[in-house]
Amino acid sequence: MRLQLTIPHDKTIKKSIQITGSKSETNRSLLLQALFPNLKIENLSNSDDGEVMQQGLKKTSGEVDIHHAGTAMRFLTGYFASQEGKEVILTGSQRMQERPIKILVEALRELGADIEYVANEGYPPIKIKGKKLTKSKVSLPANISSQYISSLLLIAPSLENGLELELVGKITSVPYIKMTLALLEQIGVGTSFEGNHIKVNPKESVDDTTLVVESDWSSASYFYSIAALSNVGAEIQLSSYKSNSLQGDSVMAKIYEDFGVTTSFSDNTITLTKVSDDIASHVEYDLSNAPDTAQTIAVTCLGLGIGGHLTGLHTLPIKETDRLAALKTELTKLGAQVEIDAESLTLQPTTDIKPNIAIDTYNDHRMAMAFAPLALCTTILVNDAGVVSKSYPDFWEDLTALGIGVQEV
Ligand SMILES: O=C(O)C1=C[C@@H](OP(=O)(O)O)[C@@H](O)[C@H](O)C1
Ligand SMILES: C=C(OP(=O)(O)O)C(=O)O
Image 1 (cartoon, helix red, strand yellow):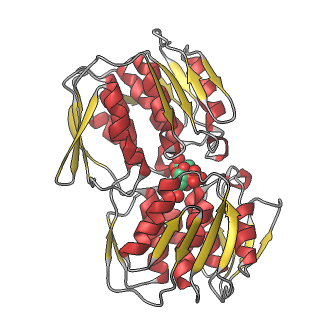
Image 2: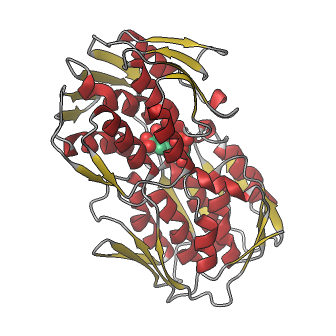
């Protein structure tokens, strides 16, 4: 499906949107619920990634295909490895078979797991024969993906002696590790995280608890971008959010102040208001704690005609696509001057955005959603627009509700 997006008649957008639950919190909560069935969950994500996680957790044998979902791949690896009597082949999309999993597999094997590679060493698909894991200490590199660490932490309370992790190297995507620990704490599991050591206590059962998933801040990021590119006075309300979020991407509220957008919290709603056009001509951010916002911010900079230097992007090449390369290609098509290296992206200020450019999305939901706000500046096309369902199936409907023209062409 190719969509053409056109400028809204009124660029002083005023609208309220209900956003689905965080996919990160959803997939953690679902795994915890599989371990402790008396847990209840509210505001689950309606994303494909949440759906494949729910389906995967129901399996006890055969093939489990998690498509493009990194969290499901990593979290289910730990889960099935620790489930005595279950035996599955865990696989995913072509791209998932190129996303590394060796660090997690090796850590689990050290704990006693039985996991074999079906095709290529270090990559899915993997054959997992569930076992009782008896060891309780392991060290693993922490600079490639925090999902390996979260996977181990999520099963930790179910291990007879809990788990102690030693994290080696610079820890990346730290807020996601803290989110995992916070959810464990919410269900009464004792945890500690000091320096490069994490400890999780064992827990046989938990009290009846309802985990209320906050809506997705990565999804909110696109509305921050839209607000930034709107006229002063634009106001977008999003729900259901918490002022004490577990999601690192809630840093959007702070970052977008630099782009003239303020955020106010009231009950469970945030109001994004475009208050000023008086913004810096160049911005710099280290996004190692919020890697999923990099595409959004880069495109906002292009739309505002300002320069940007984004660092901490070393994990982007192993996500749904090589996001650094994809960003460079697509921003360049729009007329931008972009340089990338292994962990950063530099964008020169550009005032002329080429109209009617078709953005390729590379099976990456965030490529589609990050470029969409440029519809506030010019007509733009998005190829394979259905990719958004990975995290935000209602994205195009919600964009239409804002008054942006969304038409299949
Ligand atoms: O744990 C999680 O829910 C996630 C962790 C991050 O991945 P990395 O730790 O691989 O950077 C993030 O990019 C992903 O969208 C979700
Ligand atoms: C990186 C992402 O997802 P995952 O790693 O869970 O596939 C994302 O949603 O941006």
